[in-house]
Length: 537
Ligand SMILES: Nc1nc2ncc(COP(=O)(O)O)nc2c(=O)[nH]1
Ligand SMILES: Nc1nc2ncc(COP(=O)(O)O)nc2c(=O)[nH]1
Image 1 (spheres, protein in one colour):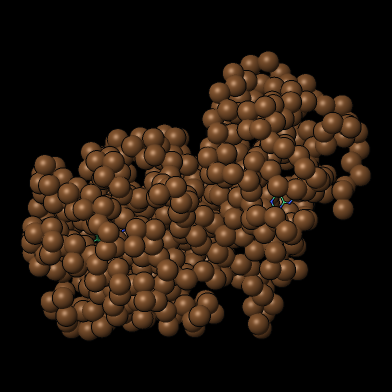
Image 2: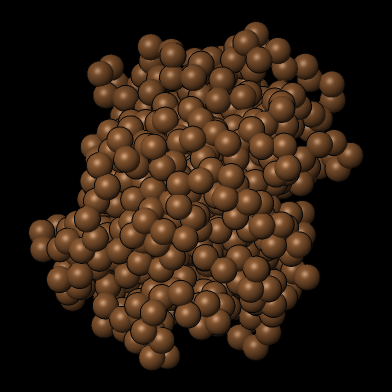
């Protein structure tokens, strides 16, 4: 239903004080990811436009005309000196002249669609206008999850629709209340093409009504991904030295891991690490870490007895040099236990590779000092600035019980903002609460119980706003000391059975990816857990 909007005078764009506009993008023809990236670059290339933020990318069912390919949708947040009509004309030029959009019929397939959703002038006032050429806010905004879901990643959860004066998050929930399958979106992480084939990590969440309370619960409904650990270090705490330096032995281990995982899923992540990060361990020099990892990544990527399309290759490193060489050797994902804190160039390397995923872990201090930094009681991060934290749009009531996860989330949000400010894209980032990194045994258990809180956390700090909505969560419990602390298993390699129980709990609390040594058994516990908690057999 289009809103019968009043025609109002468009507030002037004051020179030198940019306006802010939110542009929804959609593509379902051609190379969708490259169309989106080109639209981003073409908007950014215009002197009067700066794209400040991107939302996640979502795969969505065609809304009005069903028999056409699925769309990839999302939103850009941009600063602009252009008045609304000029901005519209720039979008049309990019659609039709640059990206050769052909409009076959209304709501039909398109290489790219750029719609102005909202426009705030230099004074932060929402512009409301209705002309033949342009209606702002977009008249079909409040019926579209593929617009509101990404938009709600970029605006504070309290932001209201300029005409209905209701929070946009409420409009989104109202559409989800209808519980229609076509409104369910899959968040995707685009990866580098392989043999011209698009590859994604895909995470599907839906707001399901709780059977008793009827409340909407954010539920993951896609299969949990397994990340198999290949430690090529002689001293890793749990399986140090087993693999040695022989590439053929390592390749066989990878092959076995992949086969075990693909019996029960159609995708597997292999995480190759060349530098142990167990507490107080000595750190291998850069050259040694490169020698242990890069040849193996190259060997896995070029090996013909491994199903390349289904294997996502990850490098476990906190060094940007190792990350860069691993990406050039074929790695799809950089798994950084330091969340970018140990190497100032890490975010720059990832910003140059927008189709490489990045697992950002929470940590404090460094490998030597982290286990002394486990006090999470400080509420305001010690700097007292005015900040408000939300769980899925509602302020946290019980602050005592959530101090640990909120403080960790605040610290992750600082790194996340820094990553985006250095040019990384929202869609690249996976969060990891960092079990065993600056957390003692009981805190690790509480972190597992709080995964679902992290996935629905947002914080407004002054004009800054960070939203972890839809962020996939990776977690690494495998063989760690906190398990031995409970079971009395003193050596790491005897903790696989216990680990597979912990894996089930991690899935139950919302983990999207689980990092394990024993892929054969953990693949089974993940499959059981998905059947119980995700109803995805
Ligand atoms: N899933 C999905 N369905 C769609 N259906 C129609 C239009 C046409 O939108 P318009 O009215 O803004 O041209 N765009 C989409 C879209 O972007 N995603
Ligand atoms: N993303 C992520 N990566 C990690 N890498 C190493 C270790 C330390 O364990 P290991 O020495 O067994 O690899 N733990 C994690 C973790 O918890 N999360």
